Image 1: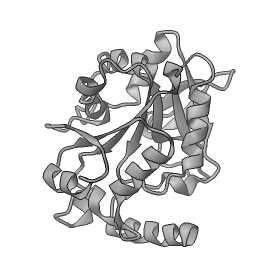
Image 2: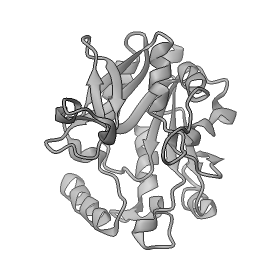
Image 3: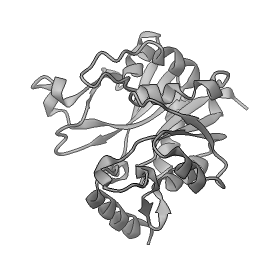
Length: 249
């Protein structure tokens, strides 16, 4: 098998979910009667992952117990220092892995298999160090904007607060779903810094270093922006449950 076809999925599931007003870890809240993280694990398998690795933190024993029959591996993120730091914790399992690494969030249960399959297809075509899922929003307020190069690959992602007036007009946003070439990912993660207000290591910062190494960053726009919806509040959880029932009955 071509090494490019090998796929490991990493699922970020360490967060507490303070705004959920619950002792339950955020990723264990139910969508259609199933923990959100279980939906994401099933998605990982549907898209053909050889391995699925959960990044755990808050109430990790509860999460492990909830998914113990789903054939997943675990790493622990303690302390929690951002998304880049989270993915860095998987190096102990993936340091000899030479395929692609799909990074998903345990609280984004509406993603469709077809969307991720298209991302995998794009990633396996050409000299791409990564492929980023994007979406077009009429009102992109608060989201990182996607700035494209003339060849339609990624130039950079600019956080809303850092955008120029011209960049604020961009409607394409970073959906926070990525596929990385493993051999590009971990060297890039070693180069990111926590020189920001939150003092955290952000995963999108790795893209700049991958691009500097000579690899292009491909982009794929979802044709269903709702699928990238995450859950931060009880209200959003109710809304996602309604959408799930509408889509899948």
